[in-house]
Length: 251
Picture (cartoon, rainbow, N blue to C red):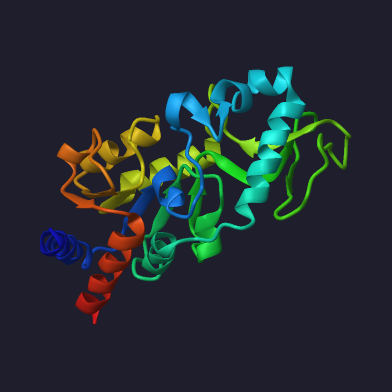
């Protein structure tokens, strides 16, 4: 099995190596390898909380203190979490392909912490806050916020700058992701279940334009049968191997 997996990685690298416009889409799986809890826990709970009580605009309207308490705890936990080898391999890939872009559904900024610069955040990020009054954004990375933080400018309540269930994606991020997907020659799909829209459709948009599709996941998904390569295993294992082979081919 190890030999078979290595052979697939080598084959995928051979096809990637001559390309210029390569992009990646990451989901919760790559962050889970660093210890970040995912939405899809047992019984529909997220870190012991019903998702509809902590990750919807209606929940924030009803109980902003409860929602903020949940995000305070998430922010605190993230301060002790580091990027893994998968994050680092993607940061290295950015140096290999001039037309690189990294689209992520994650809000933890672990890609940036690993060194990635060209990151499109489809679902926002947990370290930025947005004013519910004037709409201003504030970077509060690493800061300990009060229980109910308010805007420095208009004093209205702040909210986490993340996309909750029932909300639309940021238009600028979605437009950038669509542009990268339409222009790419290859797309890596990493650690995502391929069920959350519109991200789940992006591989098919790329494939319809002739792009090579490489899925890296610990289990098969609805995308697997349509991918050109399925690299089975944790991103922290498969991606560093892929980068290693790419570098050997390029040299």
